[in-house]
Length: 134
Image (cartoon, rainbow, N blue to C red):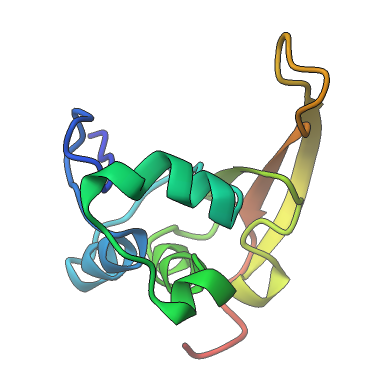
């Protein structure tokens, strides 16, 4: 079963929740995913560009650690052996502290946009339960 989330209600997704609330809801419901595609806005600018029109104001915590709570919760929804594909301008992904090991990385250029940043795609596999208690 595919589950999707975007705060913008114009997109046809299963949920239209803020990412941290979505992650925590999936954990609360005991949902398990063999694969998570994590593709949030990569910067505050993208966050503003993507979601300025949906009536959401940014709180201070969102500008400092936008997706930490979401990653913590979703990490609990992925069994050992499961995968995360993380897109962004960095390769941090979910990280070792959440029990993940990098499997592969790829650099993707944005077509036709020489002045734009490359997108880094990081594939991680969960190799152990989280080493931190969130």
